[in-house]
Amino acid sequence: MPIFSDKLNTIASNTNSYLKSFFLKQKSNSYLLQPMKYGVFSGGKRFRSTIVVNTGRIFNIDYKKLIIIGSAIECIHSYSLIHDDLPSMDNDELRRGKLTVHKKFNEFTAILAGNSLLTLAFEILSGNNLQLSQNYKNELIKTLSMCAGHSGLAGGQYSDLTFENKSILKKNIINMQKKKTGELFGFCCESIAIIKGVNSIKRKKLKEIGINIGLLFQIVDDLIDYKGDSMIVGKPTRSDEKKGKATLVNLLGYEETINFAKNLKKKINQQIKKYGTKANDLLDSVEFILKRKF
Image (cartoon, one colour):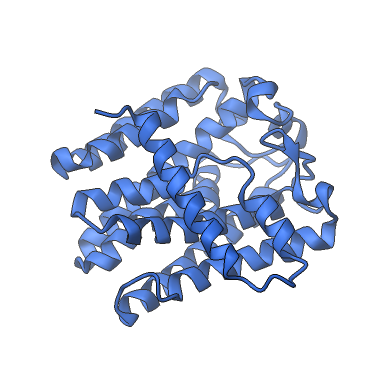
C-alpha cells in the first residue's frame, strides 16, 4: 500500500500535468502566460486537489474528473496567493523560497496574472475535457464563484486586512479564516456532492467538512508562521505577529492554539468516519495537516 506522501505526490504530479497541457492550448502570444505559469507552478503540494480526489473516492467518482476540478481550484488558490503577496496586501517578497510574482515581474503584471488565473479556473470547468452535463458544470461554476468572491475567499481576505492591529474576538477570527481559507476547501468537498447529485442536506455536510479542513489548515499555517523554520517554510516567519494579524495563535497563544487545532481535528475525523472505509484517504489528509512542522 502506498503511503500518504506518495499518494499526495501522485495527485500533485497529475494535477500539474493537466495544468501544463491546458496551458499549451492557450494563445502563445499572451504576455501574461509566463507570470501565470510562474505563479501556478511555484512548488505547492496541490493539497486542495488532493482533498477533491480523496473526497471523490468516497463516491467512486472518475479520477480524471477529479483532477480537472482540482486543477481549477488550484488556479483559484494560486491567484489568491499572487494577490495576497502584493504590496497593498501582505507585501511579501518570498513564497516557497522564490520571489513572489510582483517581485519577479512587477506589480501590475502580478495583478493581471492573478486575474487571469481566476478566470482560467472557470475556463477549465466549462471545457469539453470535463465530461459532465451542462447543468452540473453550471452549478460547479456558480458555487466556485461564490466561494472565491465577496462572501468567500475575497471577503475573508478583506477582513484579514481590516482586522490588522485591532482587538478581534475569537469567533470573528474563526469566521474570517473560514471565509479566507475554508470556503475554497469547502468547495473541494462540495464539488463532489454536486457532480454526484446528492440532496441538499448531504451536500451541506460535505461542505462543512471541507470548511473545517480549511480552518485547520489555516490554523496550522499560523502556527508554522509563529514557530516554524523560515528555511523550511520558504519565507520569513513571525510575519503575522509583526503585521498585527488577527490569528488564533496571536490571540490565544501557541499551546492553546495547538489544543484548539487538535480538538478541531477530532471533530473533522468524526464527521468523515461516517462515510466508512472509503474515507480513509480523506482521514489521512487531515492527519497530514497536523504533521506539518510547527
